[in-house]
Image 1 (cartoon, rainbow, N blue to C red):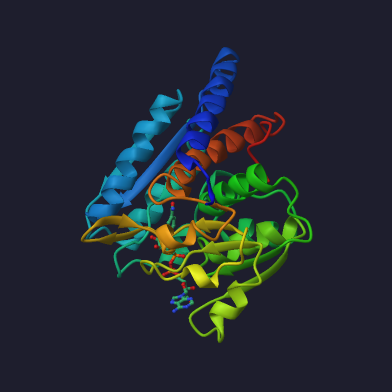
Image 2 (tube, rainbow, N blue to C red):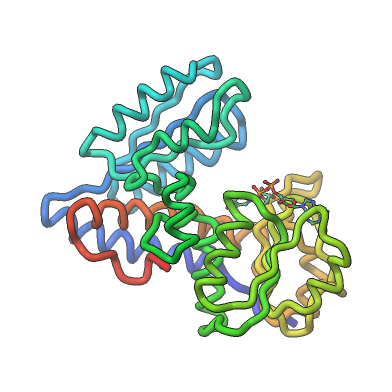
Length: 290
Ligand code: NAD
């Protein structure tokens, strides 16, 4: 049976390294600060924002939470972002998505100072990543990359299939794998012969958002499977992969919960640290960037 990729333990170790680095920065009079903006009362978003704030403080950073009512206007939100952009105590800015429908998500994200864009969703960071330049890299794919490198070492020449083409997971994941010289295929809702395609993958990343979507017989024996999905079902949280059956075939696999999920927030803290180092003219912290 497959090796369990323990994202929870990996994330805890990562947070410890970040906390040590924060201590060193504080000795030089620098305290990293992360501002999280939540508009409205989406219950899942509230949970995420709460854990982000808690973990930010736990690694010794300052956390600034801005909770705005659902009816906040585009102008009000942009005014807040402007203020955070020019606040030297704020090194990272995260606007929790999704935003209420009346707000223009792309315009809001592109208003964030790219140097403080710790989610890596600003078009400048997307372009920098795509062209192999120093960027802010989206947290979930960055976490997946760290797990893959830890599990496999070299990714060069491996066949990777990424299921899902979203801007927050699928596309940046594919970019990162490409950057590590994997042979990357992006599959999506219109892809034909999906099982056959998946069976060719040494690395299979599932970011679809459908419970138990990936079947055991889609998996190449010995493959490394990264399950990004977080699906709430009657039986609790499940991933996009039929975990019980898949772990009989895969070489290594992430569980849900306890796999990719904890890595995402740890990488958010990593990005905040990186942003802080860069704005202070210090080298990027070791092992936290791709
Ligand atoms: P999304 O809805 O934006 O994208 C889903 C993608 O899946 C789309 O590109 C779509 O083309 C593809 N898809 C849908 N049906 C398909 C099908 N039948 N066959 C093949 N592809 C299909 O979702 P997202 O934001 O990328 O998130 C994906 C999943 O990952 C969700 O479950 C989400 O909750 C989870 N997620 C987890 C984390 C984390 O921290 N672990 C972070 C972000 C998202």
